[in-house]
Length: 476
Image 1: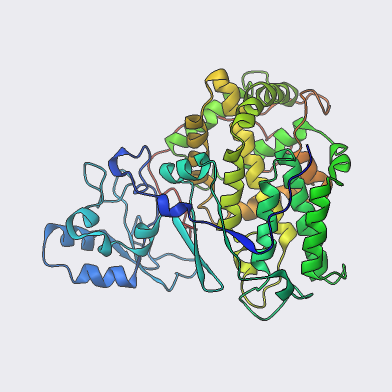
Image 2: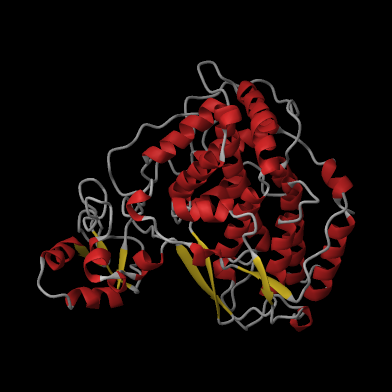
């Protein structure tokens, strides 16, 4: 099949799906009022002070911890400076949930005095709001089950909208003083078009996206003398022609190396954040699906991993191709890919190749978890299992401020950050490819460490404590 034509340059995929979100309250399977360090902004603080004397006001006053203090103990925090926009945080109770949550798992502030009294974070979550050239865009945090359902299960997630930024406006220089980034939308549109181009298997679309980012970085550094509009036109033409297909099909396959990195990524935050029961269920299904057990080796795990991919994961996602496309599109919108949130600021050097590596790490981790979960459930694997896995993993990883940097460091250590390494990480192929000597699997998923420390461990639920360490926030 020939690749589809590129999306016209005068249209842009603006996200509107967050408008469909409605909190399902007590029907939600995983309350967002538990485990977070919830910030209170100045506007909400002032409204709380204006409340008449009542049991609710007494409870609010007893639950607020001044900014810069630990949200559990009330002690002054050390290290990172407090966010100046945060006036206070809400102290979690003994069950590690918001004390303002009613027995029906509803917010007492909202039910008793109205939504307008909620803090900005509580009122907007799971929506993530950004302004690009004065236009507000909203993506969503998939740590919310209902948000995950909307993002993952909507077949046509993005709708084309007029794009005021014609490519002719984009200049040669990617390091401009204008923080409006006049060429950002055109670049992002090509990235979104690549992710949704079903003429290529998804791993090839990801590889093409890596090539795209590397070339843009070369233009930014002056190593490639090409204007941005001309490069975008040439790249879209190459994708449409299928000229890169043959070379991608010769890329190396190493299932065991891929699984090894997935295991190490899965273990990154086990010692830095509380392991919630839903994530435990996710890890248990994943490890069962890749054949973890006494005497397991990376060879045996890799064989089970390949079988789960080919017999369970691949058939399901061939029937539901929009799910992972939507997952990637939401990250692209949320992270302002390929510039990143920092890169959107005036005077900041854009590192698109690095942003792509972090996107690839998130994709590889989530795909790896889903492969194991699919292997565990077999023919019964369903969209409900997908939503559970993505939501639980997103809540465990995405809101931790260190995760992406640790993931990138892991790829560097594993020599997976260059084009060849990322190809190994992303490549999908038939089972049996790749062939390191058998190595024993150690007893736990862990962060990078000495040889023999990387393996599979099913964590037990930890005693209640903050999901996020000091300095973490909801949402990013």
